[in-house]
Amino acid sequence: MESKPLAIVFRTSSGLRASTARVFSKFEHSSRSPRKVITIPKESWVIVGISLAAQLFALWKVVHHPSFSFSITTLAFFSGAFLADLITAFFHFGFDYVWPDKFPIMGPISVEFRHHHHRPMLDPSALCGNLTRGGYMCAIISVVAWFIADFPPGNWAYFWTATTMWIAMWGFFFHQIHSYTHMGKTVSPDEFNAAVRRISALPSADQKGEFIKLFNKVGIPKWVRFMQKCRLFLRPEVHWRHHETFESDFSSLNGWSDPLTNLFFGPFAKKRKAHRLLATLNSDSGV
Ligand SMILES: [Zn+2]
Ligand SMILES: [Zn+2]
Image (cartoon, rainbow, N blue to C red; front, side, top):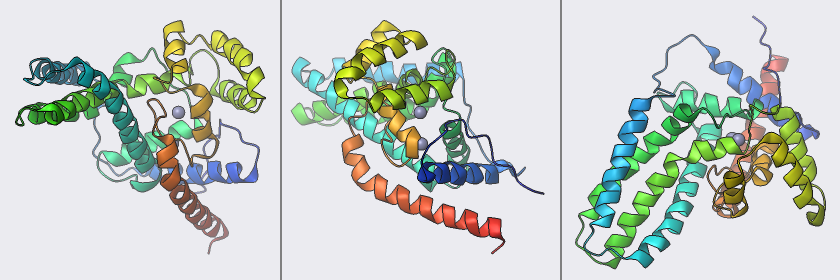
C-alpha cells in the first residue's frame, strides 16, 4: 500500500527544511504498525497527585534539613532550573533522534514529540495532560531528593538536596511552560510560528514592538510573558528555532542549557537527519 506523508503544518522555505520535514514525516509514518507498544497515561490526575505529594515531601525534607540555608536555597533554585532544562533537552533530543518508535514507553512518547514538529499546537489550558507529562520526571527526581536529604549534613549535602528538589519542581511544569510558546488554541500554528520567525529576522530594535503585538494577539497571560521576558520560562522567540530545523535548541523549560547542548546535539542531529534522508530516498526509489 502506498504511504502518504502527513500534512506538514510547519511550512518551511529552504530545501534543507523541506527535506527535514519530509524525513520526519516518513519516520513518523513508519510508526503506524498495529503492533502494540507499552505506553504510559498521557493525562491522569492520579499521577499529578502522586507527583505533587512526592514534591511536598521533598520540600518538607528541605525545610527541615539540619543545614537549611536561605542563600543556598536561592542558589539551588537557579541550579535546579538549569539542570531541569538540561534534562528536558536530553530527553527531547532522545525522543527526536534516539529512541525507536516501538521501544516500550519511550517509543510512543518519541512519536508524539515528532508529531509535535509537524503540528506544533499545544494547549496551555490542557492542564492535566501538561502536568502529567512533567509529573513522571518530577516524581522520580523527588524520591532522589528524599534520599540525598538523609546524607550526613553539611552545606554541599543541603545544596544537592535543595537543587534536586528544585529540579523536580521545575520539571513538573516543563510541558505547561512549553505549551505557552505555542498557544495553539488561539491562533493556528502556521500563522503563529511564521509570525515569530518573521519578527525574529527583523533588526533587534524593531522586534520588541512586533513581539508585543503578536503576543497580545495570541493571548499569552501577562504574568507568563513576564516570566518569559525574565528568561525564567522558555520564550517563543527562541523555541521557534527548534521547529525550524529540529537540529538545535532542544530545551523545553527556559533555554539556559541550549548554548551548551547545541554544541554536541547539533552535529549529531545533522548526521541522523542525513542518514534518514538517504534511507527515505533509497526506499522511495526502491533501492
Ligand atoms: Zn523536537
Ligand atoms: Zn515546541
